[in-house]
Length: 168
Image (cartoon, rainbow, N blue to C red; front, side, top):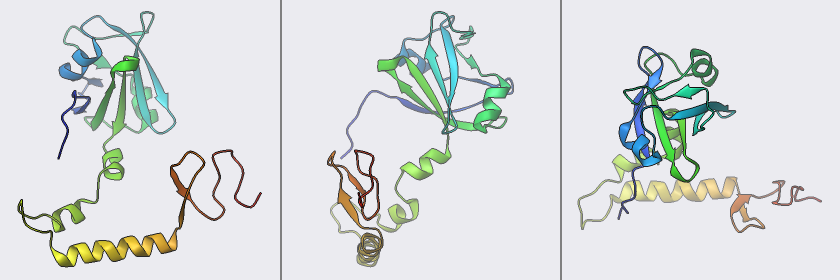
């Protein structure tokens, strides 16, 4: 079952002047027209917009952020491109990602469609069997061992949480 939480995500489109907006997310962040922000880039190709009283950018009267063309190009965002907005209220920040991040984060949509069933019914057998054999094959080809932190990490030659290799 899904757990409802404060809305922190939205999909927006850069307008023809390079502005983006989502009033609901900006309200979650406590931002309104006239809010000063700083815009930086992250090496992963994301924009990071942070509330900054001395920031060089100001939310417009229509509560939009104008992102300079150079920053959009650096992140690979094209004209009128849809982007994923992620609000981080605890940091008064907004992270702007390309939609390709969703492709990496969400389950394979083909598998979701293949495994769909009516409530109370079992998932299709063929798809579940294929998923089980695929999972078994992937675990055989790339072993996973627990790391020092308790999270899974690649086995054999992987780097431990202390930074050294397994062969140290």
